[in-house]
Image 1 (cartoon, rainbow, N blue to C red):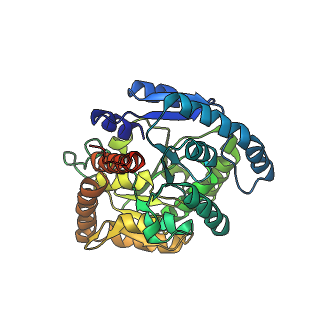
Image 2: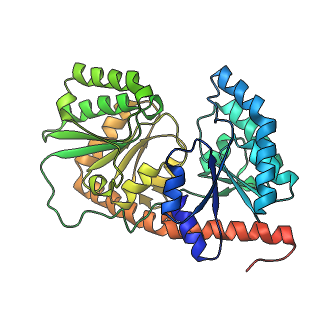
Length: 363
């Protein structure tokens, strides 16, 4: 969102990001990038499986609507862009203030039935629905003609293929994901074990992603699994990396082992670096990786490490296939997912909504 906001400002589209009052370092990141922010007290996005969090979310709802209403009355935006299915409060506040609402669906973590209910609510409130992939819109019960697809962006000028260094003898298989149960690091270790056992060349697993103390039990469990499988010494655990492009471009393959996603940034970054991807069938990964005549990787059934290992070995042992997927990934990233293209689509949608609201086109 930061990079898109920066590009939009060059086109005279002023962007203000509204972040929670406990927004951590988000305010500083936006400030460093020259994008304005407003901090606002608002309910934490709940885990739908935790009754206490849902109760707190419902209880905070009236106050959240009032706070967003006051903010919109002060700021007078032309369009309110809501990111996430649970952000009903700002959407309603904007609707009641007569401000067009663009509601962005960017997750598939909700159970299907609840997702369809929430999707129906959002569709009735919003002036325009957008989704991070077609699969994301459908997950929320919307027909293809009820939303626009607005993919996540990748900076293809930063995430570039490795053209200068010689390829080493060690095969590097990577995962870029913060440590939590939904990202499937245990699946990554199991797949890496299978690949290592079946290939003659040495294999190394590179893990990039933040580790938080509240996920210590999960981390410890994955490390125990790695010990049990004899894989601990084959893992290169990097933690949070502010600029991961240099590491990603060294990968021979990226694995996406998540239980749910929308339009995963890690996949886009790998594609832009010319790294083939093997992903579980989650969110919009098939739309990203298997475009007509431009296969950029393999998509396998969710939570099937055997199928992921098979696809990985097929790509790693076929130089022609690996090279074709590498070239296709880079080409698709530049043509479709580059930040400038995605920012331009944001601008088109914003200006279209604002123009309809004012009864005229906005140039």
